[in-house]
Length: 156
Image 1: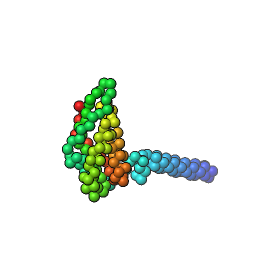
Image 2 (image 1 turned 90 degrees about the vertical axis):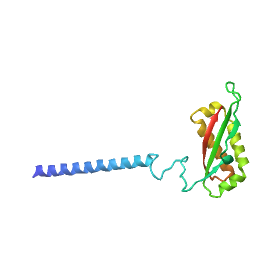
Image 3 (image 1 turned 45 degrees about the vertical axis):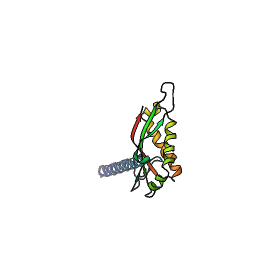
Image 4 (image 1 turned 120 degrees about the horizontal axis):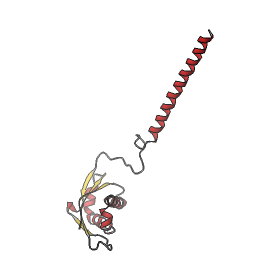
């Protein structure tokens, strides 16, 4: 009798211990899942949800823009030739941008002129320019510029 009672108590304690371990494992996995950056519903500040529909505007009607780059001791007289395409979130914005093409081209030119060839040739250089142009355009166009794409990007 005593042996059976002792076995029953040990069995109950083992089952409880097993349930506690399973519960702790589930809790641990839940915490890890919620902390991971790829968890759904937890987007970082830099991650912006892509709109359903984007509209395209080709700066300068798709023709290349040329700018002088900032001189350095090792690189003097370098120029850049780019074609720029803007993705915007407002259907009517490309028409407005046509009317302000000269302003857009001037912003792109001023951003490019502030860079050296060495800066632009670094892997992150193009991305920095893309972001700077986008930020400057969003000041004018009420944050409706979603992306800046370069077709041609030649430095000579």
